[in-house]
Length: 207
Image (cartoon, rainbow, N blue to C red; front, side):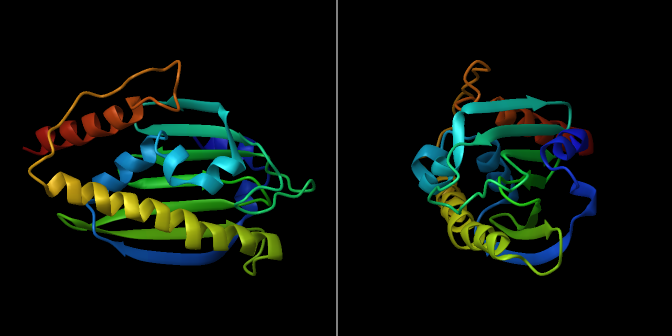
């Protein structure tokens, strides 16, 4: 996982913490992980993200306790934030580490994001975000990326987390089968299945 991230962002090890962000969320932490491990919601929930990334280049891979999603930037002048020709990061990678931490690199200046989904109750969790750049003070382009992430992308996902949690609490919910298609990874739920099996195995082991 670390090797892949270094390949996507040269100089990754030299980045420094620039910004912290936290958000209380009315959803179980596992609901957050489920959402972040599937990508078929993006076309509906994240229109500006769809303009930033080329989902036809979507790749996924995994091992026992990690998963990786990767795509290339499709449009430098996209609805999310501008990606300059001089920017060194041209591809995006999102990696998840069991049980509740994600690392992501976005197109643009050298960057690293860390996202922790921390349980605070059966139907609540804390989103804890850290953003790393080449210096503590963000540049104009780095700030544009931060503004989009904090003011657009995170609220879009938070609405999904909380609405799914509301649906899980309803009497209308019934569990279904996973959709698995490794030839169409952008539509597949095999990473969600992997996560839920790890949860199941951990609970069985503890019991």
